[in-house]
Amino acid sequence: MKRKLIAGLLAVLMLCALIPMGAAAATFTDVPEAADYSDAVEWAVSNSITNGTSATTFSPEMICTRGQVVTFLWRSMGCPEPATAANPFTDVAPGSYCEKAVLWAVENGITNGTSAVTFSPDLTCTCGHILTFLWRTEGAPETGASGPVAARFPANWYTDAVKWAEYQGLMRGSESVFDVDAPCTRAMTVTYLYLVMLNESPLASWNPTVIQRQVIFDAGSMCGVVYLGGFTAREDAFIYDRDFWDQAIADSGLAEDFPFLNELPNESIVQTAYGNDVFLIIPLDPGAAVSVLPLNWIEHDVKGYMYTPGEAIYHSYFGQPILLCCNQSDIRPDVMVRIIDSEGKVMEWQPFLSLENGRVDVQTESGPAVYDLTQYPEGYGA
Image (cartoon, rainbow, N blue to C red; front, side):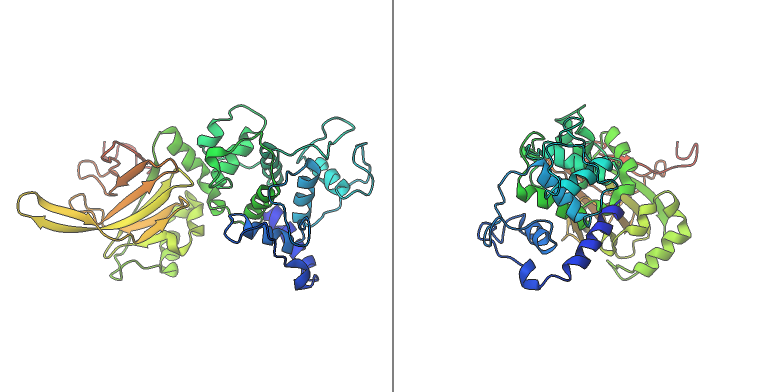
């Protein structure tokens, strides 16, 4: 998905290698170090995507125009030459800063003119516009499951772009106040570009799960689970042995149904002591906080065995799928999975197989908030 943009970025980096370090690095008095856009500003200036508005200011709240946004995007792609020099727009002056960017954007279907002969380069660029530009630059990919932001803006020209951006985590931290008609500021523009260009979107590596997430969404559950079978138990708890798991995945043939298993980062493979039953867990919400907590069991004189959750052995704020190898006993399971979605809803679930039918048990205290994606043989465990 990122190949087009990353290729452009590499070209920019090669050009910027010729720029003296002092010329690229700038300290702006109006960009606090703790600002959530500070890294994006540094990236944009260092890679000649844009400059400051003066030697000491970046003007992060200044509104961007259509001409400026397509120029930033064009520069992030390595300033490719448009296929034609013929300029149909009377309001885009020959030789102007945005002429090539406008021609490139139009001929690649990233945006159109506001009429057959006008582009309106000085018109304010809205949040809906920039997300649509980015989505089209990516090739208008599958959007993923609709989230609460996209649900506020159904059936419009920008809906798919907003849905994609939300699913990719591009709006993290601004979801509650996001408005497609709001003007896009310089800080917002470089942040969107930075997240996409540097592959910093939390879900950038998980696009193959779009279908699974949509199934979970349609089922009204908070996450999906697939029981992948049993593996040889390992005595060393909480290991991240990539060679072992790559071989286990290859032997199982699981990558045919779930190709993103080969992309799982090491920290997303979690194994408990003596765990040998493997579950693939796919949270629906890309902004979910996901934790795996070991369960400490104690014997109570009256209530029998009881457990207390221990310190988390896995935690992520980005809702990534995880491969969990644990003890699946429905008598005393050894882990609890806790998911807190972006709206604060909490689900706690102990993954195990039911002794009644051998299927994954998806019940939680609040009901079936887990959707079983396992493909069972016909008639199995009926």
